[in-house]
Length: 111
Image 1: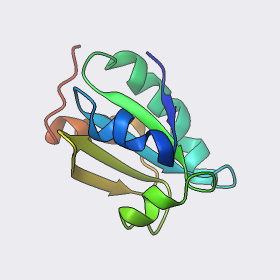
Image 2: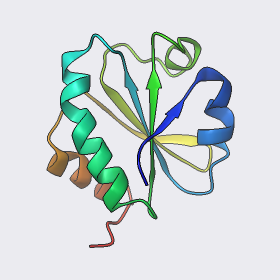
Image 3: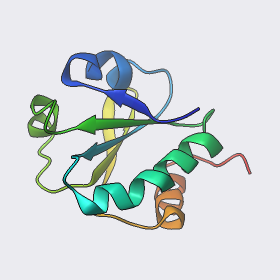
């Protein structure tokens, strides 16, 4: 399963009403660190496809949701479970650190 593109319009349906946990990556085309973590998020999405949905929200195209959740810097990653934001990380980090954060937040890898 690869990453899912979401918008302000689809956020409630794709994230808040999702069956399982959703990691939302708030990013923008001009953001270098956002581009740095994109391949890691793709890999995590493939590896943990059954455990977590990785969704990407472009803050330029969908500005309402980031302001609703107080996103001030990008990349910002938020983990949502049961319609609630349960954990947040700001800034680029290596794939292993993202996996550790997800694990601490209760998303277990299948491997």
